[in-house]
Length: 442
Image 1 (cartoon, rainbow, N blue to C red):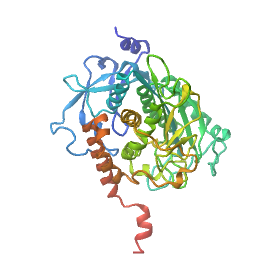
Image 2: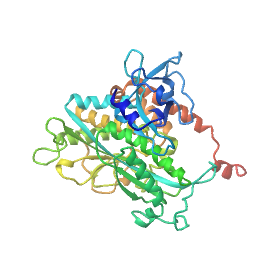
Image 3: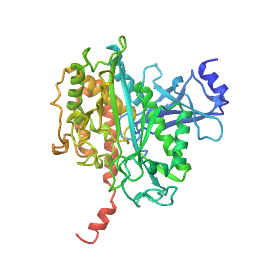
Image 4: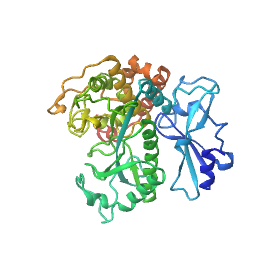
């Protein structure tokens, strides 16, 4: 009996949720009875499942016309309980393969593995720590009605800014107790919880660790928080900009790189000073982040977050402990020297955001890119360094050949095709603003 089979038996599992993340980060897959679950034969799904738009549509001509299946093989390291299920249910993340045993190059999980292999071949191991911001909102059944903060234990919604307020978090203690319990049951390595700047905007940080494991955890965490909120008659949203007059939500990514043989942080020299590798990684981020912003801001709503003076970056300046910059270097010891990518919104696919962050750093290291001087002042006074909307970001990404070489050309073309389809669908929508101001006035 395999370790996975033994785990299912010991936990008396009745059903298994077999899941994969698609381009959006939505969990796709099948739920099968325990006796039908197979580790060896795998499960089949159409390849096109990976490349659905957020509305469930399909871009044209990005998978073969024959609509082939792919084989899903469970990763035994990802087996977890579904803690909110009534009966014992397991969930396991799968990897996607073709029938000849080669990986499906459209799988976000494979794209991250592909980037990690570059570091592995160098004898390095990247370390990642995500920070997840999100909003708790009242139940909203009508998408034309703006979101509102929920009612807490005092019977009143938040009406002002409550950054870092302990009492504001305590308003929703039962919800967060469930979130922590659910995360513990799934071995999700969450760390601190704080109240962010926005009304009922929260942030939960993860402990640093292996990039693939952290991407898996973020993938499951989003689902976990949404599920817990629903059980408390609220919604949790990971939209980048869910409310007009509140700040957006980010997924800041801290990264460092360790030499696997020595255990030393390659961002620091023996004397504790910043290494050339560290500076080249920043140089690569500065060069490539503007070209790959579509991965960090993948939806039309994402760009509403990236505006001046809202604790969100508008360029790729870098600085020490400077939160106005897109690339921040926190104060730390030489052993913990790291780079914080502040561009990604919390709406992005964690596998792809991590892969692209590491890929930009890798390209900078290989090309020996030199960064600008660290900025000591306010980065908001500098011009925008990247496209201001999804429609402009897509062609810029298409033209970034070095990134396509690292991530896979077919994958990048498919991602752009999906984003184009989403933008076209969005552009057809007539908004309430247009009806309010144009209907009878033009």
